[in-house]
Amino acid sequence: MTHPAYTVIGAASTRALRPMWMLEELGLPYEHTSTKPHAEAVTRHYPRGKVPVLLVGDQPITDSTAIIQYLADAHGAHTYAAGTLERARQDAMTHCLLDEFDAVLWAAARHSFILPEERRVAGVKESLKWEFERNQANFVKRMGEGPFVMGERFTVPDIILSHCLMWAKSAKFDITEPALEAYQARIRSRPALAAAIQRGKAAA
Image (cartoon, rainbow, N blue to C red; front, side, top):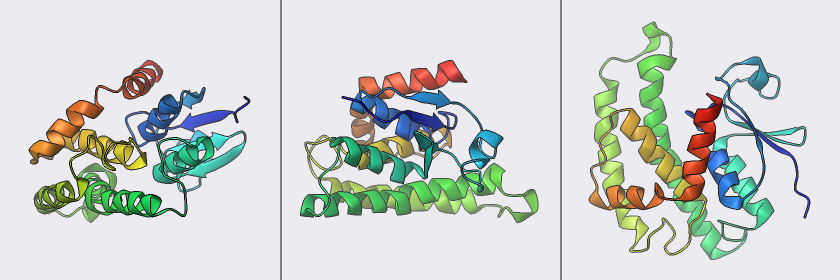
């Protein structure tokens, strides 16, 4: 079966790890261009300069969540079908993670080293850490007893949650929920994640 030519643009130390991981889960070949945000390899496809960008042939898709959901839909794996109640619940979990995990970590990064120094708010990181802990407690209540976010099936929000937990560790945000620590230990053992991380290191 012939698949489109995929290229992931962005260093694996960024959200570019998410589409790399999904492509590894799907067992699909892809090229990886390791580059920082705002590099010419990025801005030629996305003037805002954010990574990742996925090239499908010569057509760009931006935003890591849009990319991994596209890949899951296009290849019929790691997602529930559009128009089903299961997909609506999956999308709800995805948006919750983007609002309550990803956005909090991104705000901390912006006020730590991304925004111009005069635009950073001193002390905001402590407030964001408090918010992150509260959000963890609330999210665990929604996860249920299964090994994955959606229960027994690995889906798109698992990539987002696990990546956010890795990001949190590197940003010195505590994982305060034992259920999330146990979840992360399970997910970190997935061969596809290890393959994506190794490929990112090789390209760095």
